[in-house]
Length: 315
Image (spheres, rainbow, N blue to C red):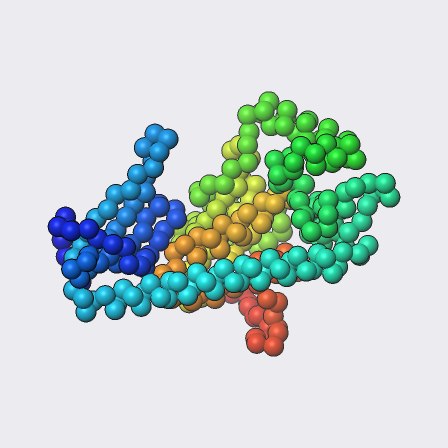
C-alpha cells in the first residue's frame, strides 16, 4: 500500500477520516477526485504567529485498497461514539448521584445561613458546591474555576481558607518552588517514597529496574523534592498494570493522586491502536478502593471475577 507522495492534477475532496491525533494535530483522510482517483491524504495543523495553517501530503491508492481504510475509519468512528456515550453516561450518573444523595449524609453546611454546601469525602479531600450539582475541589479549583461572585461568597463564608491560600502563595513565591509533573525519578527517590508510606524495600539495583522497565513513569516534584510517583506497566498486549501510586502525606488532598492516575489512563488510551482492548489492573492499598472506583476500576471479587491474589518471593 506504500507509495510516493505526489501533487494531484485535480481537486481532492475529503471523503472520510480514519486517523486523528489531537496531540500533534495530525489526521489522515481518504480523498477522492471527481474522476474517481483515490488518495491517502495526510494533514497537519501548525501555528504560524497567531494563525493556524494546514499542510497536506497526497499518496495515490488503488480503489480496491479503499475498503481497508474504510474499515479502520468505521472502527475509529464506532470507538469515538462509544467513548462519547460512556462519558455522557458517567456524567449523568455523577449528576444523578449528587442529586439523589443530596442529603445531610453527603452534603452539609457549616452554618444554616451559609450558601455553600460542603461534601463529605472518604479520601479527605475538601470539596464544596453552590448548588449540590457542580462540585469544586478546594485545592485544585479555588479560585481559578470560581466566578467572581462565587469567589466572593466563598471567602466571606470561609475567611480561614482565604488567608491560608494567601500565605501559601507567598511562601511558594518566596521559595521559588512549584508543583510539577515530570517523567524522571532516581532509584533513591523512588525507594524513599516507598519507605515514607511503609511499603516493602528492596535493593537500589532492583528499584532502578522498576523505573527503567516501566512503560510510563510520572514523578511529582515540589521544587526539586520528589513528593509523588506512579508507574504504568504495559507490554503492548491486552493487560496493563497500574503500580506505586504514592503521594507524600504532607501533599495529600490537593488532587495530586488523581492527576497521577489520570495521566496513566490518558497515556495508555493515547498509545492504543484503533480496535485495541486493554484491561488495566491494580492492587489497591487497604481502604483506598473508593479512590480507584472513581476512575472506573471495579473491586474484586465481583460477579465477573474472583479475588485478586499475590505473594512475595525473596532471592
